[in-house]
Structure formats: structure tokens, C-alpha cells
Length: 160
Image (cartoon, rainbow, N blue to C red):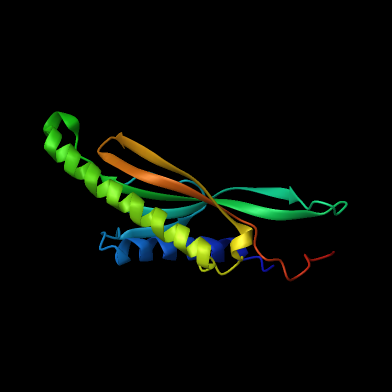
């Protein structure tokens, strides 16, 4: 496995999110990037970050482990401040964010099913995780989702 596998996987997930939004005629934020950790919240942001890594034991094989990495995807949108608007404006903002969420969920599920979500693992090495709503807080709201990937390891680590 190349040392840039985590970055490659993160860029694959970011590209999948951009495609999901664009395919459904949803606005793609200008601020899209791969981050080391959860991004600082900002209006109109799409980011992927490493949320953690773990070792999964291989059943039936003594002293064998497969490394996996959990990625978080964050989509944030500007959100009306309740003191300044009425319920109709908040409901319209909710409708837009729900459409964004469903675009991401549908595209990620399809990409996982057909094995095209990431280039670093087959569908067997990908687990779709939790989808969570973020906010609203401070004029922002959004959605996050997690994806765990066990990259296909074809090269032995240095020194092994």
C-alpha cells in the first residue's frame, strides 16, 4: 500500500460527494477540500477528513490484522438565524438541506454497490456508516457521514 493511500481515498470520497451534488443539480460549495481533522465550520463548505484508523482481525488467521481508516464527510450550508426569519424560510432551508443529504446518501450507496466509490478498495473493503445532521448553530447547518475503508494492500510495509 502506498503511503498516500489515505489521501487518495479521501480525494475519491470528496470527488464522489461533488459528483453526487452536481448530478442532482445541488449547489457544490466553492470551499471543498481534504482536511486532517474535522473542518472548522464555515458557510458553504464540503470537506473530507480522517476520523480514525483501526486494525480488524482476520478470522481464522493467527496474528493477522487488516488496517482500516474511517473518514468523515462534512457538508455545511448557510442557515437562517431564527430571530430574523419566519418558519417558511427555515422550512425552505430544511428542504434544500434534505435534498443535499439524499443526493449524498443515494450516490454513496450506488458507488458502494457498484464498487466505484473509492479506487483504493473493492466494495468488500468499504463500509458506509452513520449519517448525522449538524446544527443548526451560528447561522450554519449541515450533514456528516462516515465511510470506513480497508484499502487493498498489495505492497508489504517497509521492513517487513
